[in-house]
Image (cartoon, rainbow, N blue to C red; front, top):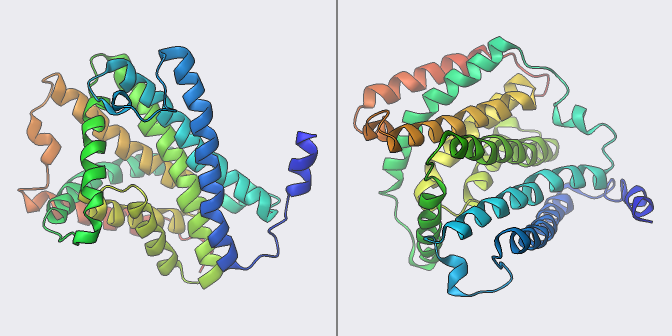
Length: 306
């Protein structure tokens, strides 16, 4: 019965307008998020005896280690439900016969290209730090003040998330934030949304920047709005120019994982804490990083898409 319904639903949105598809996509995402949240909540209830079905103060207590572990599990399920499953569900409902070809996933990526993605990820760090510094001076309208409240709560939990006592903790965080987040976000934003906007408007630049804007806004982190917007656009151009989703996934993975490694080394006195702020005080690093990013982006093979 279940497989029959899935088969019958294939392509039911194949004749929908692009504006309708853009309206339906958030609905698919919301459905995936709700489903994954329910599954994840049941798992956390069984494993940690932590309830995510209640609204008690305990649920939001970042000092509770069991809670933090449970929230990491929830983040894993939510990443799958918010990004990975909706991406494939949306393509299924559109009737895309070859999802890998549509996503530009099928092409392998060479070791040279992977090395270029690593260098670009390292260069992105001082640029992101500098943009984050500029972001602090941006005016936040009073009607958006709720974002500060959300962000304060998120930062408190994130600080606990990033406490990594052992190498195993580091590896688990790389799996969660490096692998799952990078894979899921690139599938949905670059693979689905950017391609959808490109089909609709026919402008790769508009598709890249609008996708980057939505990518930045959806995270609800005001302090990172500007860096995430600009770096999201950079990743979008890497995907567009390379014609390979694996390139953007590896770039995203290397960037997230490098930040985690820096945080881990700072926590264990492996490097000075100033490494976390490289690019804020020394503009030379930012200029050099932008030069490297420009050269490597220019060297990427152009896709056939105009």
